Image 1 (cartoon, rainbow, N blue to C red):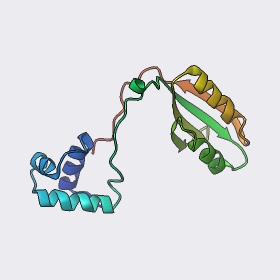
Image 2: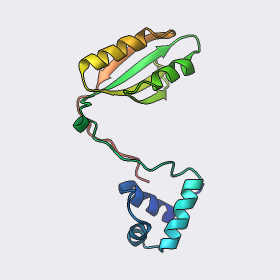
Image 3: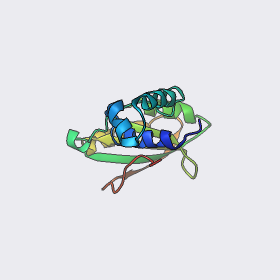
Length: 147
């Protein structure tokens, strides 16, 4: 889908606050409410807008440890290993990556013990050859792409 300046303006406003009414989005973008409704519907139908969600503050919920785990997978079993790891409740993202490692996993834990148990568990998975884990100390920037 080719996005024009109106689409981009609507997306910027919704990216800042997806709970705004169409009327408020229209006021902020300088277009009619009907235009906003039609454009949002089109953006949803074309999967530009995939979902509406809430951004949680995990640290305030007690999940103070965030880890990045890089994994080397053997014997072409990448999807099998990724799918097994992805169902773990503390895993927030699983990525195929290029470079020395095959998989990058982002996870959050309340305690070091929880992280330790998770790492020991995935190290026993068949076809996991090596893991390397880093703990994030501070997040300087975490934001969606500004379109």
